[in-house]
Amino acid sequence: MNKLPIGIQSFEKIRSEGYVYVDKTEQIHDMISSGSSYILSRPRRFGKSLLVSTIAAYFEGRKELFHDLAIEKYEQQKPDEEQWISYPVILFSLSGGDYSSPDGLEDMLNLEMERCRKRWLKDDEPLSGRTLSGKFASLIEALYHETGRKIVVLVDEYDKPLLETAIINEAQEEKNRTLFKSFFSVLKDKDFYLQFVFFTGVTKFSRVSVFSDLNQLKDISLSDRYAAICGLTEVEMKNSFTTEIKELADANGYSENECYEKLRSMYDGYRFSGRGEKLYNPFSLLNAFYDKRLGSYWFDTGTPTFLIHKLESTEYQPEDFTNGVSVTEQELSNYRIDDPNPVPLFYQAGYLTIRSWSPEFQSYTMCFPNEEVKYSFLQSLLNSRFDGKGQVSSFSASGFVTDLRSGRTDDFMIRLRSLFSSIPYAEGPVSYQEREWRNQMYLVFTLLGQYVRTEIHSAQGRCDCIAETKDYVYVFEFKQDGQCDDAMKQIKEHGYAEPYRADGRKIILIGAVFSEKEKTLSVWKAETLK
Image 1 (cartoon, helix red, strand yellow):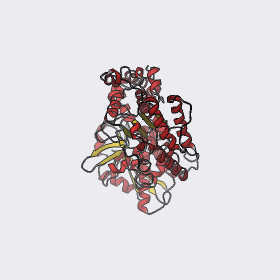
Image 2 (cartoon, rainbow, N blue to C red):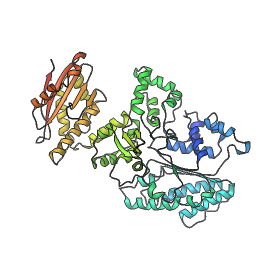
Image 3 (cartoon, rainbow, N blue to C red):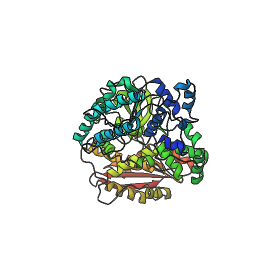
């Protein structure tokens, strides 16, 4: 089995210690040779820090680390004196640090500058300049005069100091923002001394104000050209992890084709441009190979509490993110934290991705990227709606699925009633209550869809839900403060079960009533179709 670089963000460590490295240096070379200042937004755990580390190693002239990689051939095409030139690199890695403290950001920037000074400058004199931005300007000029080379500035996770304090500590967030803006505005004035500038982050909303003076940065976050610079394509996965894929398939009793299909469903589906190919989440994929099982690795490393609250404060419904929602390119590129539209934030955070692109309207259709994100997020959304009284602490599908597979209709419905009883009931007009009731139903049956095939319909004239197991087909119709007989009559008159009559499974029709007074399922009726 190959050494899998789970959580390793150092290019040097991966290359020198024999870990698998999926070669992204073709795209890196194209970026470096085509421009000099960029900003890239990608979700967490998608390889941004490794990308920055690789760029740093290249500009430091670390020839030995790039043996047999694509960028090596481009260097060999240059005159000897121009190959593997070593430039001074200033790398600000902002993923660590306590940015909620008054001087947290200033301390981190000072620390990174001091490390760079000690490495590249011969004298031990402190940097001149009375302000932090003054010291930064002094460092850039000193490095240039000391080495005779232009400077490379790399900033990884630039938005961490702002995201960490947004909403919860607005005064500190504003202080960090002001410091950040004045500090990096130096890059505009010192452009002559710069060879290459590269920023990465999760979001782009801060770019509007933080980088208002740094308008030379080219935003490649939605570029078709660099859509796959982070993440793994299917070809890259198959070429680099043949052994791991076989071992995963063998451990779980899958055929090779079944294994590929399950990996696609769980971890593939991310797209970062309108015409870009689909990408796998590298963090989840590597962990699945290591553990030889399909788990929710990426989702489990972050709590989407803020995103859940953001969604619940809007008119968007959970099924919108499954069916697809539209957003313009301008909305994605210029998002602000106070924007009421949650779609750009969900996209930048990795919970939504691009399904399709309309050149005519300059808009994207966004949806959940894969089953890992979809089911994990909906599970968290459902859990957030429990009342916390200990009746039901979280939704577990196992009992529900066992009942469905065994044909225990009443047991299933009793579980469903208990679950809905534990969710605070929405106050408001009847139309709003009905909408919330159907949202809960959608969440539950979609989560059951991980284990039994379910179809959720909301269009008039179609049943509320059909759930299929190996031996049973369940046809559900729900009414608000109605009659079970009316629900059953609708199922029969509209022929909801007819497409399943010929397949040999037992068909069970279920009409159920949700009571506004009781705040849960009150009664139901089940019939086996003859």
